Image 1 (cartoon, rainbow, N blue to C red):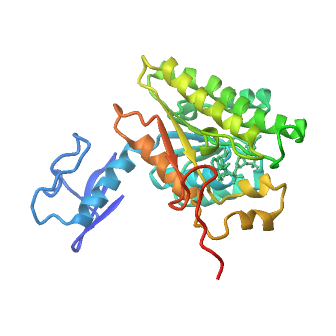
Image 2 (image 1 turned 45 degrees about the horizontal axis):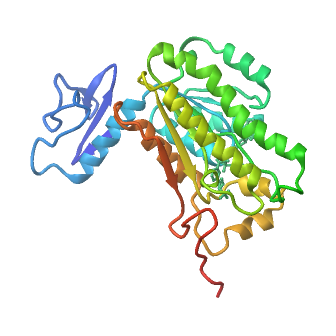
Image 3 (image 1 turned 135 degrees about the horizontal axis):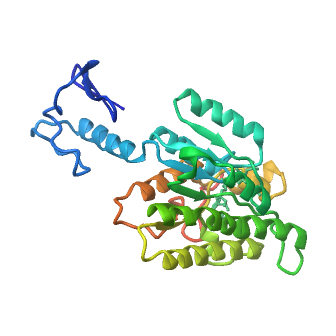
Length: 318
Ligand code: NDP
Ligand code: 8X3
C-alpha cells in the first residue's frame, strides 16, 4: 500500500515496516499516531482529509492481507465483483464456479496484480466433487477465513402449478443444498481455529414471494433461515454470519432467469439504474471488515428507485 503525502511517498509492508521515498524508516512516521488501536489518528490539525482516507484504506487492507477468502460462483456478477474487491485488499482467494475458462481468465488477471489465487472448479450440487475439492486443500489454503456462499440462480418465471420440477430441482439443489453442504464442510475448521466469517448471499426475494418467483423466493427464504440458524448455533464462538439480501442487480442472473433471452433480460432493467456486482461486493467487504465484536447479521440493499421486491420506479421512455 502506498500513501502520497506532499512529495513524500510512504509505503508500509508487514515485513519491512515503513519506508519513505524507498528508504526504511527507523521509527513510525510522526504523522501516524497509532496503528495498534486499529485506527489512525491525525498527529497535526493540518492532517489532510485525503491522507486520512488513504490511511483507513491501509488499515482495512492490512486487516484483509493474506486472509483466505473462498467464493462460490466467482465466474460472474456478484461473485466476480467480490473476487476483485477482496483481491484489491490483499486477500488470497479460492475461487469456485463451473466455467473453467472464465475461472482461468480471472485467475490470470488477479495473479498479474499480485493476488494468490487457487481455483476449485466444481458444481455445488455435486456433494462428492465438493468434498474431494475441499479435502484436497493444502497448507495455508485449508485455513479459510471468509466463506462467501454466492453461487445461485433461478430458471424461469413460471407459476408454482405450471413450472418444471426438473428446473426447480436445479434451483433448490444449488441455492439451498449447495450452500448448506459448503457450510457443513468449511465451518467446522473455522470453529476449531476460533475465527471465521460466513457470508450468505440471500435476496430481497426471500422477504416476500412475488408472481412467478415462488420457488426462487422459497430458496432465498431458506437462506435467511439457514443464516439465522447458523448464527444461533455459533453464538458461543467468535465466528460471524451475515445474510446479504440484494434487490435488482444487473448480472447474468436475469439472462439465466429468462433462459438465455438477453433482450428480455435487458428490458427488465429499462428505466431504472440497477446495482451491479461491484456494489454488492462493497457491502460484503464492509461486513467482513467490521471490527471483530461487530456482527452485521443482515443487509437489505437495493437500487434507490426500488422499494420492495415488486415496487420500483422507472423513468418513462422519452
Ligand atoms: P450470475 O448469474 O452473474 O452469477 C451466478 C454465479 O453462480 C456464476 O458464477 C455461476 O458460475 C455460479 N453458479 C451457478 N450455479 C452453480 C453451481 N451449480 N455450482 C457452482 N457455481 C454455480 O448471478 P449473480 O451474480 O447475480 O448471482 C449471485 C448470487 O446473488 C445468487 O445466489 C443470486 O441468487 C443472488 N442474487 C442476485 C440478484 C440479482 O438481481 N442479480 C439479487 C439478489 C440475489 P458458473 O456458471 O461458472 O457455474
Ligand atoms: C434476485 C432479486 O427480486 O430479481 O434475487 O428476484 S429479484
